Length: 333
Image (cartoon, rainbow, N blue to C red; front, side):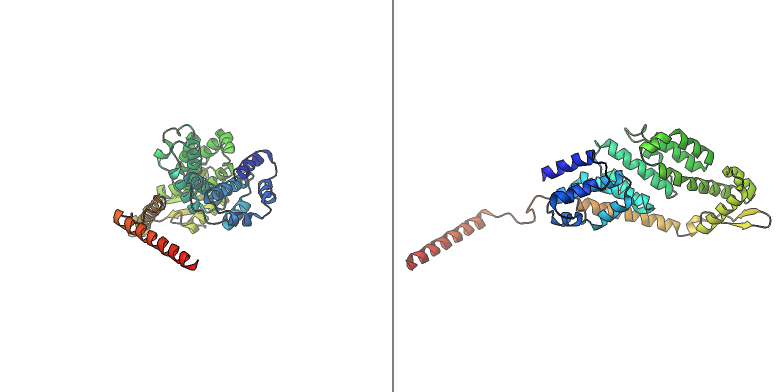
């Protein structure tokens, strides 16, 4: 087993083919990836091998193949906390690319929370992806996320990016994306930064809708800094989509080219507080369940300890049984 894991690590560093690692394992053991997982009985090594395969696929941006492998692999039992954290991180990245942001957020935050304090680099990566996922969900991460001990410098580009998204200024967003382009490329999050452009425009549009009861489409295009030849038409399309998705409560007067915002109602008369409380309660219950699962007990702790009297009785019965068997053997002879 140790030989196999050592070979896998060396092979991953030396091979150039994205599927070479999986083929190497299959050829070494003479079985397919699915048979490999079902044959292995040691849970910890099984989890380690699964993480190595997922890491190899994600390294070459093969997210579909990684999801197929993950879905066909046995259920992750979390024999090792370190391996479970890695699995959650890889799962969060897969879910992010597949646009399943809610599940991705849960996996990434759980990985960052469960990771050991000494694993600062791993926690930084988890926080970077979690910040982007929360921004894509329309949330603004708290300032304390960026001020964690030992992470402030590494999260500075994402802090400035968050400020640009919060303000809804497309020009500031472009400046931040160009300024830290090399950092985002090194973190392999450039494609997620591109997705954020739509969220910046929507945030700016929401701020405009709150500030103005009526505003022309041309002024919206100027405020959003849509520098295109068809800026007014683009602004109209963006506003229509935001109204359809429920991002703003307004109507478009096509004849006059206006956007009329409706009065903001009392949020406590809606179901939003109930939904917020429900999500927080679900989070606490999930944390409790995970804590219970992570508990470790000594073997056979559920069994009652044998008293001295019971031990004497058991030994006496064993001696009587041995004598009886010896007498029967003598009678046979």
